[in-house]
Image (cartoon, rainbow, N blue to C red):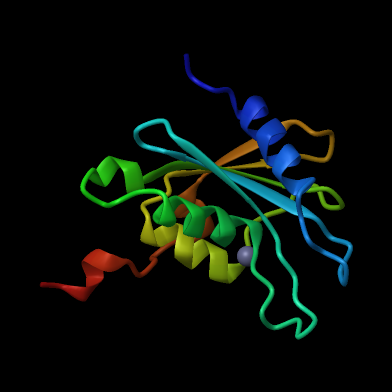
Length: 138
Ligand SMILES: [Zn+2]
């Protein structure tokens, strides 16, 4: 059964509960759903040096890479990402995360609207004319 956007947002909210955000007090959670249906979650992890802070989206992606081998390409292709910021509605991915989400073929982005309703948009809308692996040529 297909997971609804609302269910993915709830999973992202759960992930945000694990955030390490003592400096910003801005917890964020993200869930990536792969082409094969597997899901990985992540939360933001801050650092006293600030610049080393890792966003929830990239945290979910590094977890996915660490837990897959790449022998099954669908296992590393992102179908959807859901993002929840406990203090921001909507909480769109930052520019760095958009580029990393692009690397793995993300097709759809889900965030919360003002009333908590899912806002679903195509990835192309968030990062048009983007640069990706296929642009390196062969
Ligand atoms: Zn980010």
